[in-house]
Length: 284
Image 1 (cartoon, rainbow, N blue to C red):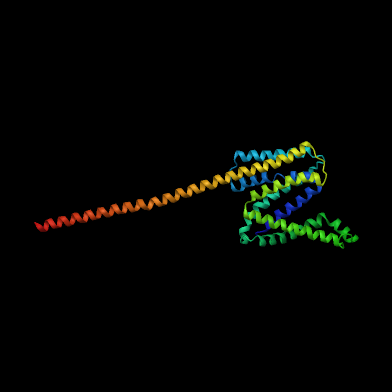
Image 2: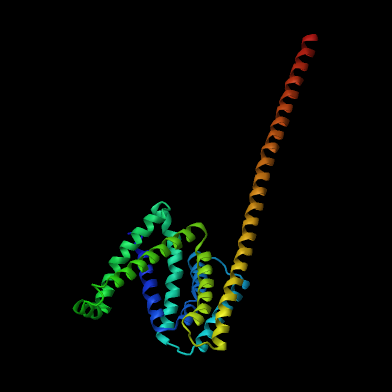
């Protein structure tokens, strides 16, 4: 039950990710999904009440500008594909946040989390398959073209293996770093893939579309540098606060010991004074 929210987000991410890839060109696919960083900052500020610096906002504006340039420069633009890409970015950001949040519930065991997540996802995918893909499944069963083909099942096994491996690597990266680092690396990778798609798939390229890709990549890299500097400053301030507290804790016992020694001296002086008075009386 604790992993179920993550599984729901995971199903949404996979669904809209595949729909986006189905309806848009490969070169534009990653640009359409480039708003992950924007959603990640929005959710972090909203859920954790973390303030956002002006430098971070500037980097986000560059990423948004790249998204708009890429959308306007796309030759075979698809509105439903772009909307699916934005929804995929939303779920990718939520997936990173929920993975980091739910890991302690499974004792920080990424294997258990991946297993539970995939089992839940298989159950959640069944209604979607029956509703949206029942006709192609029935046609494939009737013809027997795919279900009895060794090439088809070999391709499915290879795709499943790589999909499972990507899930493991994603969990490991989030566990070792943070959701922010995972989203940054994913966006930068997506921009590089978009450039490679022009050569592999021969998608038509426009000046505005290429500028959008480079703007997304540049904004992601600047965002990485800004967050690294902010994290360094936060760590240095924490260290300085710890050193100040440790110094104060060391000074307080010394002051107490000084006050105690002063009190002891007063008691000794009073005792000595009383003894002197007693001696004088005895002498008299």
